[in-house]
Image (cartoon, rainbow, N blue to C red; front, side, top):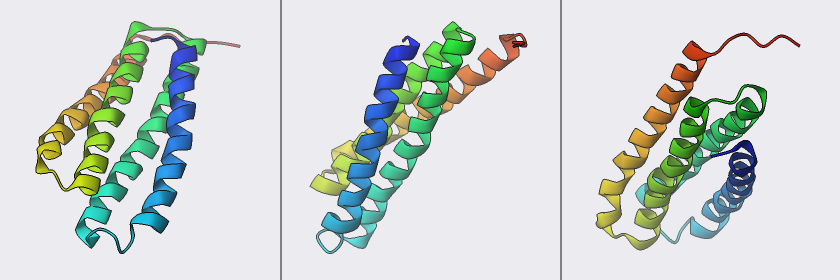
Amino acid sequence: MNSRTALLIAALSGGFTVAIGAFAAHGLKGNITPYLLQVFEKGVQYQAWHTLALFMCAILMRIQPSKAVSYAAILFTLGIFCFSGSLYMLALTGIKWFGPITPLGGLCFIFGWIALAVSALRSTEVTP
């Protein structure tokens, strides 16, 4: 993944996070159980944090490109789709089949953070 793609995905994900968070706050309250609303909100929360991480990856790729940062961006993107997406679908449909997808997204998030750590270990100081 290149910095332009990562920045585009982060921007779209950021806008979607705001929209879906508002949808949860105003459209879902009273229409699904409190537990499923909490599940949905957890998806929004993790999407927001990892959208920021993806944005950080886009910036890092411009400052000091590395395969590890590119892999982190890919993993954060996959994590958003698998983790948050499965929680959204579980909350909206009640279909428990989406539940087992969530941990795969969580693993993507974890490996994304590990990839960033690898990038930090391999990086050199950039002086202005």
